[in-house]
Image (cartoon, one colour):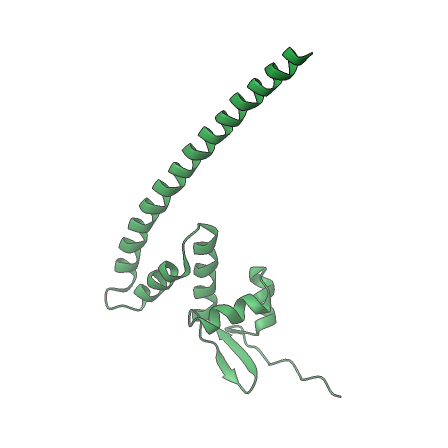
Length: 134
């Protein structure tokens, strides 16, 4: 059985293998974002051909995920780029989302600090009780 030939790429197009390797994700991850409509590669039979727009969008998706944004927020941010006001509306929206995300993360940090302090107090109490038992 012959193996299918790799799709020829130009400097402005990439295969799924090339995209996945560059971003350090699996083919499955790339296909998942395609299924969700977040990226839309050109199709040549069963071969996907990714253009600069797909590559840019994938980079934004992955950055958003690293920052903890849900996929629907990421979709909104990315889609705003194509809106009439384009980059300006996208940046204004993103700044609002950053403020919300920062507030959420700061609260989580305070909650973690409180939990760690509580564990420390509980540990001290347990050690004291153990010491009294001899």
